[in-house]
View 1 (spheres, rainbow, N blue to C red):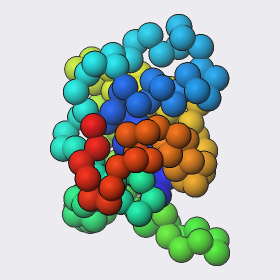
View 2: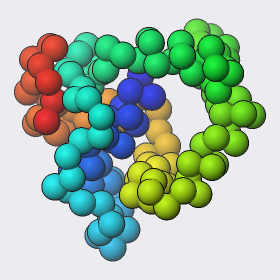
View 3: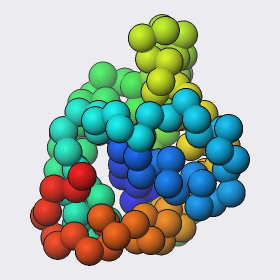
Length: 141
């Protein structure tokens, strides 16, 4: 659940900006986020616990198959995912590429201000009318 919420905020800069400001980030910290930028990649849809992308299963399977992500047991909570050593190297290389500067900025802000539980992030997103009022399977904007 946490991965899907963070992915949504990364893809939708307008909503990221609103959530960060609502959670106490200063305006100067979010000024690099363009609220008019179109969402990254394909649109997400509203599902049971908020934003969801049906391609997650295929993408995670592909990342696991390539050795970039590992499945990690969570005590009493099932399974989670973590970056492998080779996945961490690739992520570092991408962060160093200036064509990813705007995404890297957002990732830093997510880590600094929104490293919360998936349930907490879900609650933040349900404060946005575009999420709370959407029907299941409706594309989010």
